[in-house]
Amino acid sequence: MRPTEEVEKIAADSKLSVSEKEVRIIELLSGQPDRGVAAATMCLMETGDDRAADFAALYLALLPGAHEEKARAAERLRGSGQLVRSASRLVPWLPGQLLDSFVTDYVSDPKGGSPLSDVIFEIGVNTPDRLRPFADRIESHFIHRSLLSGSPDELVDAFLERWREGDDDYDAIEALALIRTRHAARTVLAVREEFEDPEEWEILLELAGILPDAEREAGYRPPYMGLVTDDGESPHVMGGHVDGPVPVCPACSAPAQRVLTLAADAVPYGLAQDPSFFWYTCSCGALETTTVRVGPGERYVFYGPHGISDPDRSIVPGKRSMTLESHPNRVGVSLEAIAGWSRHQVGGLPRWVEVDAHPHCPECRKVMPFLASIDSGPTPFGAMGFRGTLFCFWCNNCRVSVTQHQS
Ligand SMILES: [Zn+2]
Ligand SMILES: [Zn+2]
Image 1 (cartoon, rainbow, N blue to C red):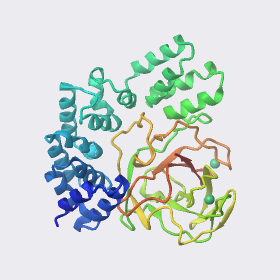
Image 2 (image 1 turned 180 degrees about the horizontal axis):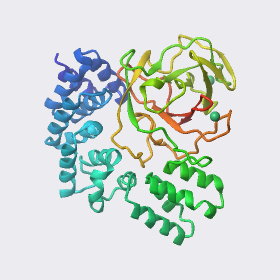
Image 3 (image 1 turned 180 degrees about the vertical axis):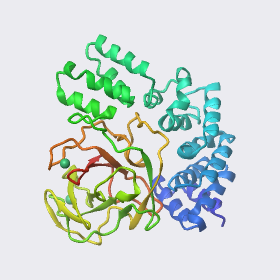
Image 4 (image 1 turned 90 degrees about the vertical axis):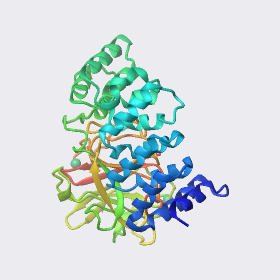
């Protein structure tokens, strides 16, 4: 049976749950030649089944590169009725001209239930500048929130006025912070004295892109999307076994494992050491963070309870790597993420599941800049060993990492 027919057959199997179908289709496509790029693209070019198209698009979006194939598939979906919805998954890789065509299609007949809504939603998240000129044609609250990112300075000033006039209208000042430009950050910095609660102000300033204690950037720039690729494809290591002591869960004593080690030399952040991030392999949820000081030669010092690592317990399916691709949103996404549905990110500003404060470094007590986020969504190699999203922070002076969990 040809891969397209097999994908259609699994997608139509009423005995399988959606997540079982997803697992089987990822397994099927990842086993094809060329990691399944050609098979997934072919499926998107020829299927008439919207469920099959969505699984194939989901798979293709787990792979880096393949820009030409992704654009060809999206172009075909654009002219295929309900199937166009699946093109939303491919938006980060599509050329500007094609994205503009989707926007034109939508604004000529904007409807909430239109299958194009999902595509427009992703265009708002990834390239808000392209959609912003048409904002008045769009009703969705979520799309409007995604369009805050990188908005012009006049909107910052308008939100500031609304916040002051509206008697501490929190929504207005939060929307201002979510614009995440230099002007937005400077504006939040300037209104410090007008806040009764200093913590509330600190969170807003971090959200806008500046750390409150030293006026440093809240994230390392520029931002990248991260994709899980096989061991050795990229110098950034995911998963695998780290010998020696690791944090352990205080409830069940299960050892943590390495999620990610970034190669300092392979990112333009001036990192003093290869930052490593660990997470628990159980689902107790007893602790919300792990904290690690990284010494030379991958020597780790863990804060809090720790024990010996176990090679049979892993948080990433096998030893893999993380391939980085330029993030289309250079400013910072303003719409919150849904855990299990977003991408991995390195650099830039955090796309929180729920807006939160950055952690403090246990050594120097300073607020830590954001360095990466790891989502628990599917990988081409199987499922991650945790739920939710991990937010990774790094103090470059003390060489300390903090991994913070949200679900
Ligand atoms: Zn546990
Ligand atoms: Zn520090």
